[in-house]
Length: 260
Ligand SMILES: C[S@@+](CC[C@H](N)C(=O)[O-])C[C@H]1O[C@@H](n2cnc3c(N)ncnc32)[C@H](O)[C@@H]1O
Image (cartoon, rainbow, N blue to C red; front, side, top):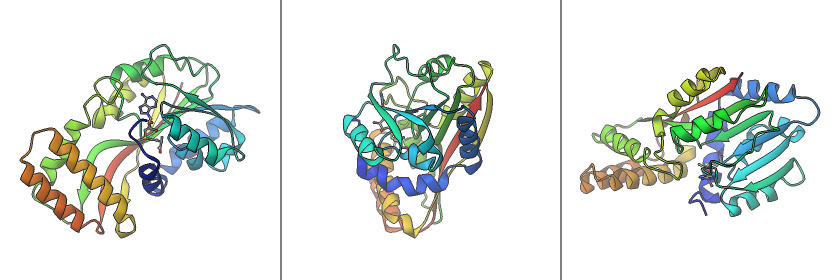
């Protein structure tokens, strides 16, 4: 088990799909489709297969290799997509440096993953994208920004503490959290890739009140765990934010497509 459950992934998927940058999705699709008859796509940290759904209908033309360390999520992805896409499931810990997954890949994808990983993981990943013409597409990586329609005096302090928590080890060494975009861009450019980046914020409102409630609770709990803030302040903030979970909120993310 990875700690990411199906319910949470399902709850966020509609907002994720609305947020993904359409231009980068199109670039990645065009790149994969130009790969000929048998196109191999490797999705890292696949969860229940959200990336396959984001690429529909093009994803039905490709051979997917779904990688996750959580067997329940892999089984869920397989049960949702066996029959509509070609897929193989690979249960593996991506932090294992000996993994060799990309020798045939035309495209490597990852969503909501690269803010969890370390700089050394990204360096290893980029080094292993050695097949000529292999592209990298990533989406929905948290960028450290949360903005609410109704301000609370502790917003900035809570987000700062949450962002510090995002830098803790999530299984890949010290996590990059909100600074992952710049680190990945530098690694890719040094390796000779051309890099396109776009913002992909969640824009949430009353229709996403339950997603907001879950996000706020997770954010408050993580902020409290850092020990940087007074507990009463965190609980006051949590309760205020839960009361306003049906108003507007923006959570920053970034997407990227890179090709050599
Ligand atoms: C935030 S979820 C994103 C899932 C999916 N990509 C999506 O967008 O819905 C992160 C995923 O990475 C997987 N994951 C986390 N650490 C991992 C590791 N060390 N090896 C393999 N998968 C991992 C989790 O099991 C989870 O499915």
